[in-house]
Amino acid sequence: MEWLSNDQEGTLSRSGGSDWDKKLLRTLFLVNLQASWRKLMKPCCQMVCFPLAAYFSVHHNRVNVIALGAMLWAIATFFVGVSSTFVEVAVSRALNGVGLAMVIPAIQSLVADVAHPEKRGLAFGWLHFTGNLGRVFGVVFAVLLAGCALGVLRFTFLQLQVYWLPFLVYRLAIDPRRPTGSIIL
Image 1 (tube, rainbow, N blue to C red):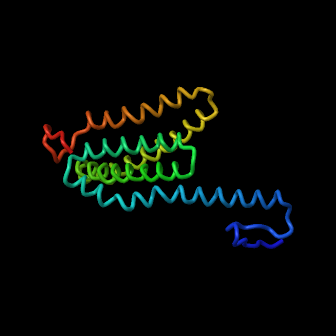
Image 2: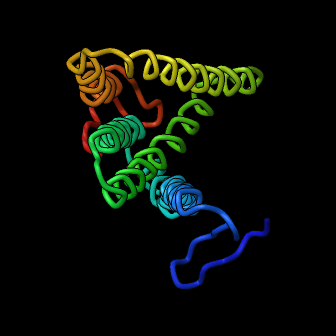
C-alpha cells in the first residue's frame, strides 16, 4: 500500500485502507503536528528572550532576575498543567520559555562569579548534574502522582514550586556584584 497526500484536508492517508484506518492515521498526524508545535514554542521564546535576560543579568541584581524568572517559569508550568486547549498550552509553553530564558543566563553568570577559576568547570558540572537530576526526579514524581487519586497533593506540590522556590531564592541568595542593601531589580 502506498501513502497518499490528501491536499484538501492536509493529512496523510493510505490507499485501500478502511475508514477507521484513515481516521486513525489522520488523528495521529494531527496529534503529532500539535505536539511538534507545542514543543517548538518554548525554544523559540527562549531564543528571543535570551538577549533581554542577559541584559537584565548584567544591569540588575541577578538574584532578583532569577527569582522573577523562576516565578514566571513556575506559573507558566502550572498553566500548562491546567490548560485544556492547544492554544492555551502553546501560550503557556511560550511563557515557560520566557521564564527559563531569564533563569539560565543569570544562574550561569552567578556560578561563574562565585566559583574559583580552578574549580569553575567542576561548579558548572555540578550545576548541570543537579539540573538534570531534578528533571529526572520531577518526571518520576509526576508519573507516580499521575496515577494517584489525590489531586490535592499534586496541586499542593505545584503551589510549593510556584511560590516557595522563587521566594527562597530571593531571600537566601546573594549576588556578589551587588551591595547587600540592593533590593530593587
